[in-house]
Length: 132
Image (cartoon, rainbow, N blue to C red; front, side, top):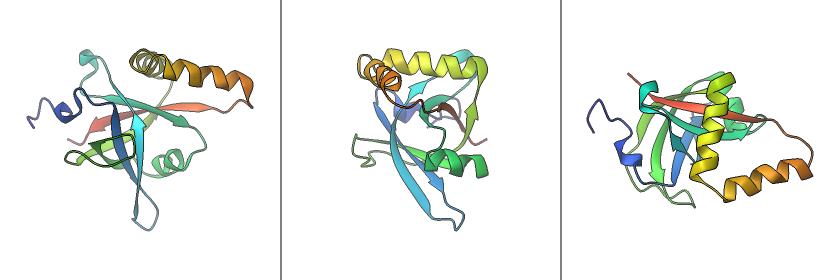
């Protein structure tokens, strides 16, 4: 992979496997929907999760992670890439959700609708950037 295209392996993919780390160093892998951010923002991928999820808690402690393309069941189909994954807010949060809604329409729209039916649970957007 070229330095200018650290996420080239994710082009055309629907899922990525995000590995975050517990305090004892053991990795926890999670398959997630993702979307690439605008080129002007530099190489960035967005995913979303619930604010109280395990991965969100682990990322609040340490932004160190790695990602790999995978299938819906989490089976890795490419090489691992070291990344920094951080929660974003404001305009970046809105942009990430809009891009995810567009890429995964109508499934993401249906999931958004379920938020209205059940107890409101805060969702976060995580920006994933390559380690430089």
